[in-house]
Image (tube, rainbow, N blue to C red; front, top):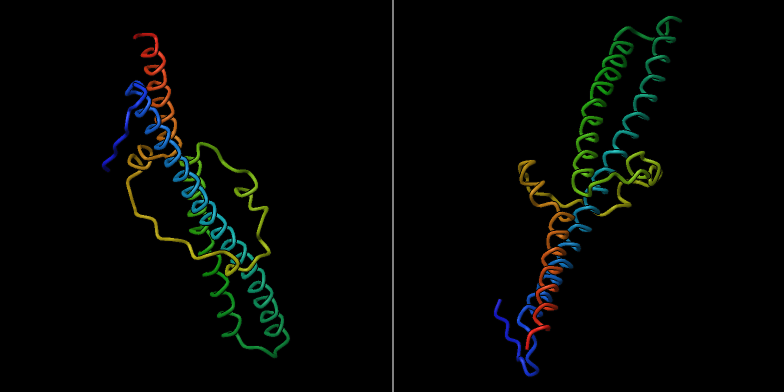
Length: 178
């Protein structure tokens, strides 16, 4: 980026540096908000998947019980009971990985923003909305956890704030001298 500034009044050169640091701070804060929103939507999508899987387990349990009653009355067959039992077992098995993914996403969100928004983590909002209510989630690049920590937007924003404050101090000190 090529940048020129005409210095008519003899401002100290650190003022331009200070403005640059503040600009970087705003840019990083914007990135932090963007990543936080994406993580929240990922968490909400997992909440919805878990909710729907739990509802499916309830429905499959009722189907299994109904097939079992029909078999006991002599109207149904053992194959229907076995199929209902196996479908129920498979659905129950699929619930645990979803809960694990949700826990991992929650942990990633905690790392990203430094805290956990309770209303989203507890899944208290948007449970009654269809999944199409939310926009499609972008695919995030897979990076190592150490790289994620190095690129946390809140840490970068704080670093830029410190650099801007340092540049501001240099500007103030420079005004003392002729």
